[in-house]
Length: 264
Image (cartoon, rainbow, N blue to C red):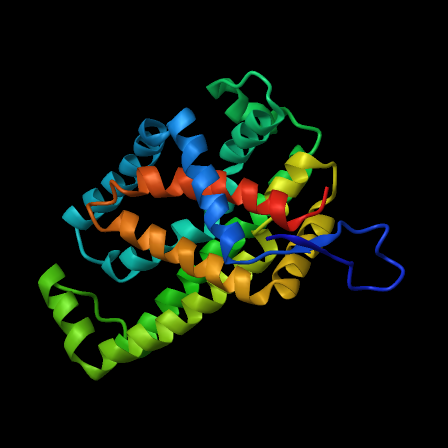
């Protein structure tokens, strides 16, 4: 269970939030509480309204040409890079429920009226920049392995990816670069958005605290990253319908992770 750990930097312990040590049981408890919050405030319909128009636009673009096909997986997998920003409203619902106050769906938009909206927007812009950098990196890797030739069909593209040396290179290099982007987002945002909602701190202070949380709990945060990636992957399998459950559950669970990691 979570135990207190002193701030790492001498002379800054009083200024910085204290980081707790967490273990596997804490992660499981966060997921259970996240599921409980989701059952209390189901958000699957809201997310379906957001997810499916985006997927619809992608499919519509594919109908008129396959030039977007090399970026299809990076676009979809990039959901994880902007997930912490998209889940701000879910953090707020969990926060209010934890305090025992009256909660309704209008409170999901309360962060936009928060005194910390500047810090929220700053971190949001940072995550969007990272997302577009990932798309740029993915496109560059594709062009370095396949050149400027565009796919002529979806089956042909899948065949080339899975059966040619260039395709294997794309999978390995692209997967490695994507992993680095995912680790970066985990470090800067695993508890930063919930911290901003809970306390009036700057974006820089929130990122520093998030980085310390990861550095002082490397194994637990690695496991958390694997859990997030696994659940998002499972959610994508049945035509992305599962994301309407896994994304809000992870959003609520992240609030409870923050409560365990950062001492109050």
